[in-house]
Image 1 (spheres, helix red, strand yellow):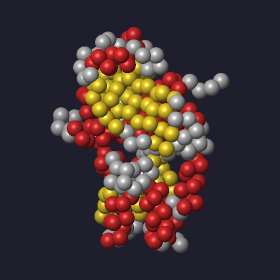
Image 2 (cartoon, helix red, strand yellow):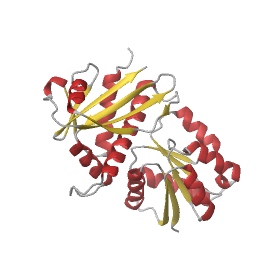
Image 3 (cartoon, helix red, strand yellow):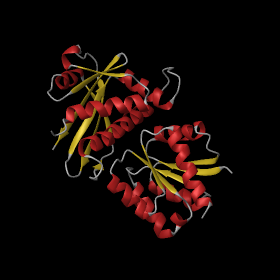
Length: 152
Length: 129
């Protein structure tokens, strides 16, 4: 049976957040999450190779700060810079992408990865994504995270 | 003996994490140099004594593969070992990089144990040449 991209994305996100940011991650159904009321961060990147596609993560800025603090091993005192927060989010997605590709397609094919990019997503767009098929939803400690992968 | 180490990665966060990991792994480190891409790394290599390079593959301006090719052309790769630290999981790509002269490969996310082991392997190997 072919690998299910959604399941592989779940595995990749859980492994990377636990190994890199030392955070406990739980998968939830989309219905279990309430409507998103605030603007979120959206980190996204593309890959090209035998299959092309893109993948991304969406989460509140507070979770981005916690992830950056954990990756860097610094105290959570609210002083983390915006650039550092974005940098950590981009690197986490970069590692998720590498794990996803190996789990999904094996260790033979070569893929070219784009540089990840962070933008802001308003609450309306976040809620549209939350209700989209193929989206994976997580609780990372006390915050939600959405993940998606689109194969070309 | 303490090693002068050059860390090449476009992520400032990863550079900081790797430097901290080297310390946690009790790797004897002299001076640490940082570069955000291959071009910056070559400039540092040109003007500083470097014992070991840790480099990412996917970087803007000049990526890790281009940097390794330039180091090979100039003969630097014969004297300065390069360890790739990347998200890359393709064994085909890793074999290609080793054929170009890369000494070792560590996959992200990395642990202090993995870093310590690779430094020992690479530096003891290069000292024994």
